[in-house]
Length: 178
Image 1: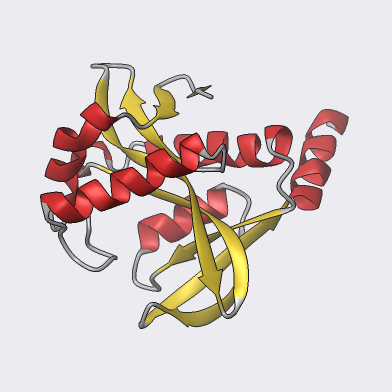
Image 2 (image 1 turned 30 degrees about the vertical axis):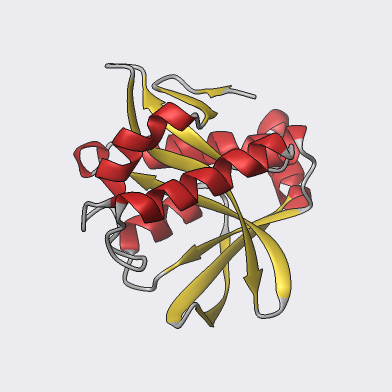
């Protein structure tokens, strides 16, 4: 499954993405609101998780390709999380710093949300965001998500933004009525 937006192609990850992904995940800016920069081995583990989800036909992360230069610039897609004892599907996104503040994360996140609700028929998606990560909070809000609660996730204070398929369907119906 591939998703397309005006400026982006979201495609499944491939083994050969390891070099660019490892370079991005070693960057402190790219990894700022997570556990810090990753080694190549840690990145390989993450990539293998994404690939195994794809092989099992589970929702997974997409490689985000910028149409302007056909380069891998980050990822956006689904993560399988356990939050306060509940299994959740998270829409997670992370882009190379060079592509920040251009609306690309929002563009990618909206495509993933639409895929979640239109194609996969998921009942609900969340985004887990560090309270200090204002750009990610804005992406979640522009993606129609509402702040549901604050919790502690993997030892960090975390805001849980959520959206349901029902809310998404209502918003789409409202748009068509206008």
